[in-house]
Image (cartoon, rainbow, N blue to C red):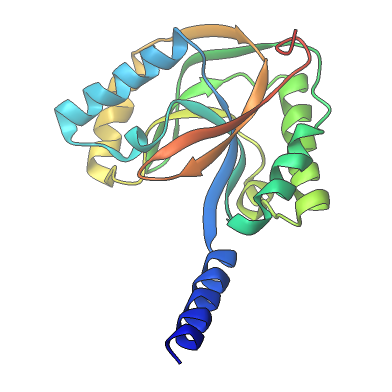
Length: 201
Protein backbone atom coordinates (compact mmCIF):
# COMPACT_ATOMS: atom_id res chain seq x y z
CA UNK A 1 0.00 0.00 0.00
CA UNK A 2 2.84 2.39 0.86
CA UNK A 3 4.53 1.59 -2.46
CA UNK A 4 1.31 2.33 -4.36
CA UNK A 5 0.90 5.73 -2.61
CA UNK A 6 4.53 6.60 -3.30
CA UNK A 7 4.05 5.70 -6.98
CA UNK A 8 1.04 7.97 -7.44
CA UNK A 9 2.74 10.76 -5.46
CA UNK A 10 5.77 10.60 -7.78
CA UNK A 11 3.46 10.60 -10.84
CA UNK A 12 1.77 13.76 -9.52
CA UNK A 13 5.10 15.55 -9.04
CA UNK A 14 6.15 14.58 -12.57
CA UNK A 15 2.95 15.99 -14.04
CA UNK A 16 3.39 19.24 -12.09
CA UNK A 17 6.94 19.57 -13.41
CA UNK A 18 5.76 18.89 -16.96
CA UNK A 19 3.49 21.90 -16.86
CA UNK A 20 5.83 24.29 -15.07
CA UNK A 21 5.95 27.55 -17.01
CA UNK A 22 8.93 29.87 -17.26
CA UNK A 23 9.06 33.51 -18.34
CA UNK A 24 11.28 34.56 -21.24
CA UNK A 25 11.91 37.29 -23.79
CA UNK A 26 14.26 37.91 -26.72
CA UNK A 27 16.82 40.70 -26.63
CA UNK A 28 20.15 42.01 -27.83
CA UNK A 29 22.25 42.30 -24.68
CA UNK A 30 24.58 45.27 -24.87
CA UNK A 31 28.30 44.43 -25.01
CA UNK A 32 30.99 46.31 -23.11
CA UNK A 33 31.62 49.19 -22.65
CA UNK A 34 27.99 50.13 -23.34
CA UNK A 35 26.75 47.53 -20.83
CA UNK A 36 28.82 48.98 -17.99
CA UNK A 37 27.83 52.56 -18.88
CA UNK A 38 24.10 51.84 -18.76
CA UNK A 39 24.38 49.76 -15.61
CA UNK A 40 26.17 52.74 -14.02
CA UNK A 41 23.27 55.02 -15.01
CA UNK A 42 20.75 52.59 -13.49
CA UNK A 43 22.79 52.28 -10.29
CA UNK A 44 22.94 56.07 -10.02
CA UNK A 45 19.15 56.31 -10.36
CA UNK A 46 18.78 53.69 -7.65
CA UNK A 47 21.13 55.51 -5.29
CA UNK A 48 19.55 58.92 -5.92
CA UNK A 49 15.88 58.04 -6.25
CA UNK A 50 15.46 54.43 -5.15
CA UNK A 51 14.55 53.29 -8.68
CA UNK A 52 15.40 49.63 -9.09
CA UNK A 53 12.99 48.24 -11.73
CA UNK A 54 15.55 48.47 -14.55
CA UNK A 55 18.18 46.75 -12.40
CA UNK A 56 16.30 43.45 -12.77
CA UNK A 57 17.93 42.83 -16.14
CA UNK A 58 21.20 43.61 -17.93
CA UNK A 59 21.06 46.55 -20.35
CA UNK A 60 19.41 45.30 -23.54
CA UNK A 61 17.30 46.03 -26.62
CA UNK A 62 14.08 44.00 -26.57
CA UNK A 63 13.20 42.16 -29.79
CA UNK A 64 10.20 40.21 -28.47
CA UNK A 65 8.12 41.07 -25.42
CA UNK A 66 8.11 38.72 -22.39
CA UNK A 67 6.13 35.51 -22.75
CA UNK A 68 5.44 32.31 -20.83
CA UNK A 69 6.71 28.96 -22.08
CA UNK A 70 6.35 25.39 -20.71
CA UNK A 71 9.67 24.15 -19.38
CA UNK A 72 9.16 20.67 -20.81
CA UNK A 73 9.02 22.22 -24.31
CA UNK A 74 12.13 24.35 -23.90
CA UNK A 75 14.06 22.32 -26.49
CA UNK A 76 11.51 23.32 -29.13
CA UNK A 77 11.90 27.00 -28.31
CA UNK A 78 15.69 26.85 -28.40
CA UNK A 79 15.74 24.83 -31.63
CA UNK A 80 13.56 27.42 -33.38
CA UNK A 81 16.09 30.15 -32.74
CA UNK A 82 19.20 28.03 -33.14
CA UNK A 83 18.06 27.70 -36.77
CA UNK A 84 17.43 31.47 -37.08
CA UNK A 85 18.92 33.05 -40.22
CA UNK A 86 20.95 35.95 -38.83
CA UNK A 87 21.83 38.93 -41.01
CA UNK A 88 25.42 39.81 -41.77
CA UNK A 89 27.00 41.97 -39.03
CA UNK A 90 25.72 45.54 -38.92
CA UNK A 91 26.21 48.54 -36.66
CA UNK A 92 23.80 49.27 -33.82
CA UNK A 93 23.89 52.84 -32.58
CA UNK A 94 22.66 54.35 -29.31
CA UNK A 95 22.43 58.11 -29.25
CA UNK A 96 21.21 60.22 -26.32
CA UNK A 97 17.99 59.60 -24.36
CA UNK A 98 14.29 59.35 -25.05
CA UNK A 99 11.04 58.97 -23.13
CA UNK A 100 7.74 57.11 -23.13
CA UNK A 101 5.58 59.48 -21.10
CA UNK A 102 4.90 59.30 -18.27
CA UNK A 103 6.83 56.26 -17.02
CA UNK A 104 9.92 55.32 -19.07
CA UNK A 105 13.38 56.83 -19.58
CA UNK A 106 15.69 55.12 -22.06
CA UNK A 107 18.78 55.26 -24.21
CA UNK A 108 17.57 55.93 -27.75
CA UNK A 109 18.56 53.30 -30.33
CA UNK A 110 18.69 54.36 -33.97
CA UNK A 111 16.15 52.33 -35.92
CA UNK A 112 18.13 51.17 -38.95
CA UNK A 113 16.61 49.13 -41.76
CA UNK A 114 18.68 46.09 -40.76
CA UNK A 115 17.68 46.28 -37.09
CA UNK A 116 14.01 46.62 -38.02
CA UNK A 117 14.23 43.60 -40.34
CA UNK A 118 15.99 41.55 -37.65
CA UNK A 119 13.22 42.28 -35.16
CA UNK A 120 10.47 41.44 -37.64
CA UNK A 121 12.17 38.15 -38.51
CA UNK A 122 12.56 37.22 -34.83
CA UNK A 123 8.88 37.93 -34.19
CA UNK A 124 7.92 35.96 -37.31
CA UNK A 125 9.89 32.89 -36.17
CA UNK A 126 8.42 33.17 -32.65
CA UNK A 127 4.90 33.23 -34.11
CA UNK A 128 5.24 30.59 -36.84
CA UNK A 129 7.53 28.12 -35.07
CA UNK A 130 6.40 28.58 -31.47
CA UNK A 131 2.91 30.09 -31.66
CA UNK A 132 3.99 33.20 -29.74
CA UNK A 133 2.31 36.58 -30.17
CA UNK A 134 3.95 39.99 -29.71
CA UNK A 135 0.71 41.93 -29.34
CA UNK A 136 1.90 44.98 -27.39
CA UNK A 137 4.75 45.56 -29.84
CA UNK A 138 2.43 44.99 -32.81
CA UNK A 139 0.05 47.71 -31.58
CA UNK A 140 2.62 50.45 -31.07
CA UNK A 141 5.36 49.43 -33.48
CA UNK A 142 9.01 48.65 -32.84
CA UNK A 143 10.82 51.43 -30.97
CA UNK A 144 14.24 50.03 -30.02
CA UNK A 145 15.57 51.39 -26.75
CA UNK A 146 17.66 50.63 -23.66
CA UNK A 147 15.55 51.21 -20.54
CA UNK A 148 17.16 52.96 -17.56
CA UNK A 149 13.98 53.69 -15.54
CA UNK A 150 10.40 52.37 -15.73
CA UNK A 151 7.75 50.51 -13.74
CA UNK A 152 8.59 52.04 -10.33
CA UNK A 153 9.05 55.52 -11.84
CA UNK A 154 6.11 57.70 -10.73
CA UNK A 155 4.76 60.60 -12.78
CA UNK A 156 6.14 63.51 -10.71
CA UNK A 157 9.65 62.04 -10.72
CA UNK A 158 9.37 61.17 -14.42
CA UNK A 159 9.12 64.83 -15.37
CA UNK A 160 12.05 65.69 -13.11
CA UNK A 161 14.17 63.03 -14.80
CA UNK A 162 12.94 64.08 -18.24
CA UNK A 163 14.38 67.56 -17.71
CA UNK A 164 17.61 66.04 -16.40
CA UNK A 165 18.11 63.51 -19.20
CA UNK A 166 17.19 65.97 -21.95
CA UNK A 167 20.48 67.70 -21.16
CA UNK A 168 22.52 64.48 -21.02
CA UNK A 169 24.17 62.82 -23.98
CA UNK A 170 25.37 59.30 -24.66
CA UNK A 171 26.81 57.70 -27.79
CA UNK A 172 27.69 54.06 -28.41
CA UNK A 173 28.09 51.97 -31.52
CA UNK A 174 28.63 48.22 -31.61
CA UNK A 175 28.36 45.35 -34.07
CA UNK A 176 25.46 42.94 -34.07
CA UNK A 177 26.68 39.43 -33.19
CA UNK A 178 23.40 37.75 -32.25
CA UNK A 179 20.58 37.95 -29.73
CA UNK A 180 19.69 36.19 -26.51
CA UNK A 181 16.90 34.29 -24.82
CA UNK A 182 16.39 35.98 -21.46
CA UNK A 183 14.89 34.04 -18.56
CA UNK A 184 13.35 35.27 -15.33
CA UNK A 185 15.00 33.69 -12.30
CA UNK A 186 15.56 35.96 -9.29
CA UNK A 187 16.27 38.54 -12.00
CA UNK A 188 16.29 38.41 -15.77
CA UNK A 189 19.41 36.55 -16.92
CA UNK A 190 20.92 35.74 -20.31
CA UNK A 191 19.85 32.11 -20.61
CA UNK A 192 21.03 31.32 -24.16
CA UNK A 193 22.73 33.37 -26.87
CA UNK A 194 21.94 32.72 -30.50
CA UNK A 195 25.06 33.84 -32.30
CA UNK A 196 25.26 35.32 -35.78
CA UNK A 197 27.54 33.84 -38.45
CA UNK A 198 30.49 36.15 -37.79
CA UNK A 199 30.34 35.50 -34.04
CA UNK A 200 30.60 31.75 -34.67
CA UNK A 201 33.96 32.05 -36.44
